Amino acid sequence: MSFSSTLISWYEANKRDLPFRGTRDPYLIWISEVILQQTRMEQGLGYYRRFVQRFPDIHSLASGTEEEVLKLWEGLGYYSRARNLHTSAREIMERMDGVFPQTYEEIRKLKGVGEYTAASVASLAFDESRAAVDGNVYRFLARYYGFREPSGSASGKKLARMKAEELIDNSQPGTFNQAMIEFGALVCTPVNPSCNGCLFNTSCYAFIHRVIREIPVKPRPDQIRKRFFHYLVITWESPDGARILLNKRTGNDIWKNLYDFPQIETPRIVSLTRLMKSQEWRNLFGDLHPVVSAVSTQFIHILSHQVILAKFYRILLEGPIECPGTIVSLEELASLPVPRLISRYLQKCFS
Image (cartoon, rainbow, N blue to C red):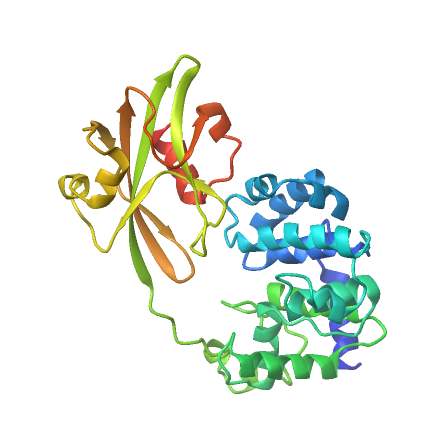
């Protein structure tokens, strides 16, 4: 049997029962691929089910608000994925009469869609012979052929894609792609791969040369940036109940269009006394001298290339202050999309 035939036979006998498998609907395939990028399967499945229950098709996604989309995405991270989905759904409705693009090249034009996602959708929904290379596939191919290019590098991706294109079964490209991904996820795993029982160990470079742990070559880690956030949790009582001041994040920083609290960022850890003397504090409170009723312990939030070290300061005012922001009730706050760091604080200290 050929490589692809052997692999596909293994897949048919061992594939996991996943809710998006077996469908030819490009919308559902697209949603599943985007959610599962940089997300563990166990975590992503719940998000996928909730997302497609609320947005079962392009029309419903395009008709929804960005805040709804971001709220469903809350906790997944990489929120640009959600914003790009929403933008692309609206583009498909407005520019393509609601018909999902049907070729790799057209799918690739959607905002935020890269080579892997376009290849997956094109092969699974439209039988286009395009190899989809994700981290699982790269690891499998790198070990099998002995690639020394760092994972994630442009040269490594190109080499893996070329090899996958050589191996792909043109009569069932979608099944081949799924089989490659599944084999990397279940057999050729990052740690403790099942080499002794592997179908390909007699021809696998890494197994034969005993370099399983060295391949794929890891890229040199980027320098991790530390950021120090001081969140001001400003509340007051109104005739209709408690109110809280929020900040909607804009610009090109992290968590764009999500809500958090007014924040002061410092280059290093500072004391509350020093913080209250800062220009940012004076800009916010003017001549007021608010009392800080509680200071949280430090929250650590790890992102891909930066670490957020945050503290939260509870401040109860007699009434609202004149400053930019969004004033909401605690009930309204629960329905707004917030970063995972904020939801962790709310669950721990503000319930």
